[in-house]
Image 1 (cartoon, rainbow, N blue to C red):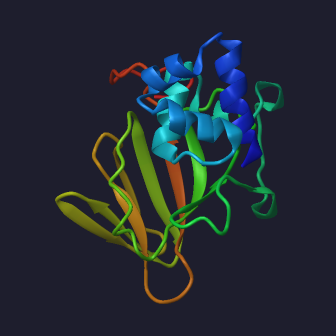
Image 2 (cartoon, rainbow, N blue to C red):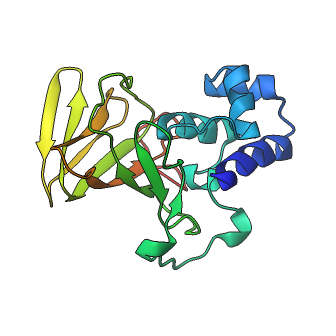
Length: 194
């Protein structure tokens, strides 16, 4: 959790940006951004992608220090960093390969809630790849619902509004989520992320 908060503030200050400028460029309210920087709120992946675009950094730079970036990164299951607190309602995210440099997608382990009803649909630039590792999940789009089991996957344009939920009565599904960051807004690849 802390690396996200510290990196947003640090990256903003490195770019000599005021809170107002970053809020305007990212489409996030100044009050919400202030809460993120003070550790009172944790941004969703969609908001993080908007902040990364506004800060002109790859999405993973919000989660890891540039000095920690490496060419080969192994993340053991027990070493994944929780990016959301366990008691926070909604989807839980764990960072994977946060120190990897020059990658085109940022991977996360995702543990979606069983009830996605109150959560809004999210959309952001880039693409997403969802792979169900354990359990069953539904990927919800405004006009389509895709049911996924272990080994199933979906690749889609992240500009399509979407959300995900776990199915069944047991544990939450374990889902691998890969998020690309189209910071240019175009269909051509960016040097760090597509």
